[in-house]
Image 1 (cartoon, one colour):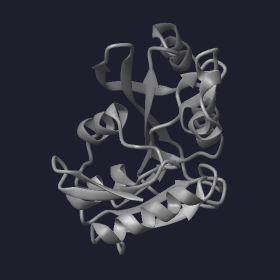
Image 2 (cartoon, rainbow, N blue to C red; image 1 turned 180 degrees about the vertical axis):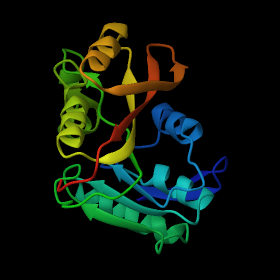
Image 3 (cartoon, rainbow, N blue to C red; image 1 turned 120 degrees about the vertical axis):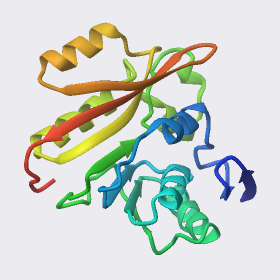
Length: 211
């Protein structure tokens, strides 16, 4: 693994090629997500390098975090990076696909920087590891929609923060979700050279149940 400094966030990370390297979408989420003082527990899905939860944990030492990632390489890197940044007692890690091993979810916030690129000719040139990290389905948002459906069916009581890309998600999709009863708010937008990213907050206000 190679060590990298992130002076803006006052952290260090050690990463290898099998772990998603923090990029514009990562920093966008870190910079724009708002955490209120009454939050006690946060779950991050697909933590990758661990940078999102590490930065948020250092900013909010009263909050307990749980990070999941399907990749053993990622969970190994997260464990090391937690120790490197001296917050290993504040963050737990589970190697699992999304939230499949969680039987009861009592966090107030769920965060996911998902794979959101559409499966097309360009994505066909990606390695299998990069496809797993970047491609969210044929249209690009299927994996996120499956997670929304799972959270709603299991009556999770939390705010869900996630990212969509203009390469696969548009105004029509927003209206479709609202018609389907999803309480959705675009918290922020980031215009890049080839796409626009949306940080979206979705509120689930039902009583928790078994997930």
